[in-house]
Length: 239
View 1 (cartoon, one colour):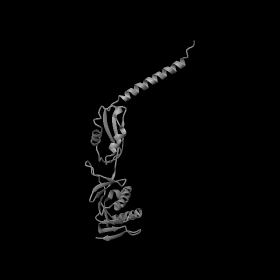
View 2: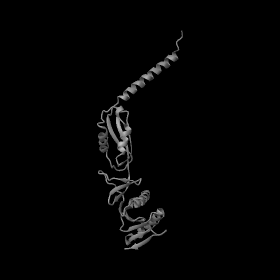
View 3: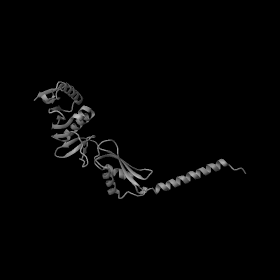
View 4: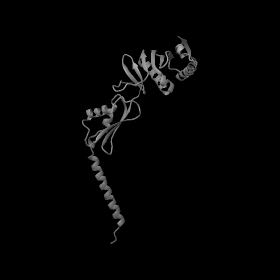
């Protein structure tokens, strides 16, 4: 009787693979949490800290150190972190070393509303509470603040943040009324009457051309008001 060594080798290989799989599965099932780490995606300032995230998880799910893997409900942990109003999204997973990692994307404030209620406006136009660990350096919004005017302010802030010159120099937006907005600049005493949010690109291009020329002529300090309300022109009022 001839022995088919190839079949025996294949059968043996299958047994080895099954054994390794069973061993790996057993180890995986018995894996426990060896530590916790929070990773913040991006390079922005922290409005929520690692300690705050870990404390939140412990309050919701109890002590996590040495907890068996099968007791972890990662989806529930992600939802708990995302319920924090500083967080845009979260991903929670267990590494092969048993470390529980939370990867967090924070919300990004682009304006600070100073009205009857005070809050940040984030980059999606939503309200974001102030953080007790960091204060964002963003334009301050004042004046007649309503739901309608805040929609316009959001469009202005989006444009400001897309332009390097404006982002570095605009420090405030004052709402006189719906469709009547003023801008305050960092280094200059004049205010800019923007008017409505129509034709923002044209208005700001006209303003930057005016600013460059006035800066070259050393005449910026002579103006009290710069108006962009009129079509394709910049109208200035001297001090």
